[in-house]
Image (tube, rainbow, N blue to C red; front, side, top):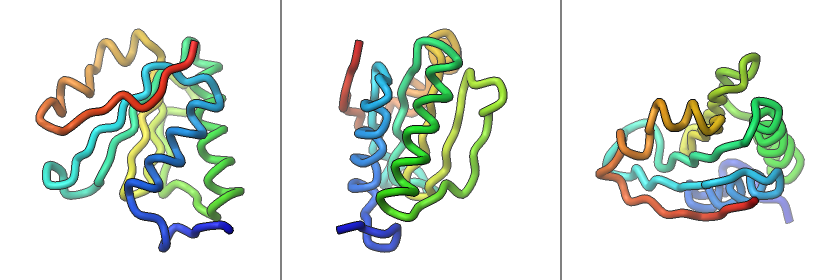
Length: 124
């Protein structure tokens, strides 16, 4: 049975996003729990793709999966043409997909260091 956006909690949405990212071989997937830390989102899901092409594929997998399985589209997408850092905004969950070099440069995990983080999947 398809859960719609209104029926999914932030945690369930984050879990679905992690699954779609993992299916596209995302690496170093981290979930930051920002409830009580940030006012505009409950979770950040941060993942990497080895190349800009893989970053686009991870984006496509997440967007297509959420549309197909839950009838959801992101409120906005940023960075897709360059695909060094693609952001998908699903309100409760904001997804960041990086190339490894760009992720190392921006270090979002360290920026939000006070937020509980958990490694939720890796792929080689």
